Amino acid sequence: MITPGAALSKSAPLLACIGLLCAWQVASLALQTESFPTALEAIRAVPSILGDKESLVNIGASIRRMAIGLSLAVLFAIPLGLLMGRIKGVASFFNPLLMIIYPVPKAALMPIIMLWMGVGDMSKTLVIFLGVSLPIIYHSFQGGKAVEEKMLWSGAAMGLSAPQRMLRIVLPAALPEILTGCRTGLVLALITMVTSEMIARQSGAGNILFNALDMAQYDTVFAMIIIIGAMGILFDAAFEKLRGWLVRWSKPQHDMPLSFS
Image (cartoon, rainbow, N blue to C red):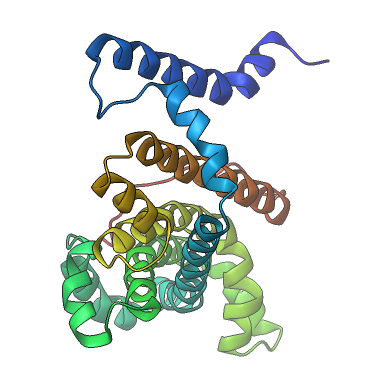
């Protein structure tokens, strides 16, 4: 039987979205400015965007860049983070570098990367990769660091080599924490993807948004914001389903602030 508290918890995200749209509608009607359309006007523009073939191609290009950048970050960041968590020398070498890179807004690197690689997919994918890697490294680092030494000693006693212990003991034990970092990285991949497309405007969701802004099509601008927000919600919900299945044996994990100390 579903309790009232559980029902409220499940419906809370939907109620929050409805409340936000209502506040938006009221604020727009109160301000009465052309550059701030009502929520209903923006929602009515969504089907025209999703029904346009060129817009779908642009959105698909954004998702492709985001998927490639996130995948490359996962392949790079998880092994590095685990090595940092288990080998002090690796952590000592990379900690200062990561602390220098972390505060730099990744989108601020876009003009430099454009000079090196042009304004194509490669430059945008690299910015996404840089933006996503740090939280995954951090959580992989914390997960690897938290593995009990007794488990590794037992693996060594059973004849497992160092790489085998890393793969068969450290990785599974650190997986809940790693997936928390991947979830954070997923959200950052979406944010960085849109930001990079706003700067290097050739194709993508960010390109649609800024082209509409240039042409004063404000309902389209806000409709794209709704679409991007919906993409983030769907991606996050899908990842949470996957994470829940992969670590169903684990206690719930919570996001933590980025620090390599």
